[in-house]
Length: 123
Image (cartoon, rainbow, N blue to C red; front, top):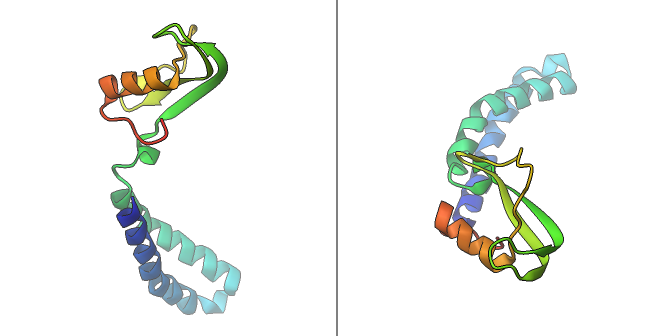
C-alpha cells in the first residue's frame, strides 16, 4: 500500500503543471471560473490514472461490512463483544438479508478467507 500511496503523491505533483496551464490560459475569466475548469479537466484526466493506481484495493472493490455488539457467533456459538458480517463484495450482496448472520472475529476471518481469499488486515 505504501508504494501505491507514493505513486499517488507523484501523480498529484504531475497534475500541478496541467492544472496551472488551465488556470493561466483561462485567467481572463477570473480565478473561480479558471479553477473550476482546471479541476474539471484534471478530473477527466486523472480519474483514469487514480483508477489504475487503486484498481486492486478494497476501496474500489466496494466491500461493505456491518458490525454488531454483544452477539452469539452463528459459526461457533460463542458469545462475542463484537460480531461481523460481510454485506457486499464483488459478486456478493447480502444487503437485503432478513436474518443476517454475525460471526466473532476469528470465525469471520476464517469464513472470509474460505470464501474470498486471504483476509485483509483488521477484518
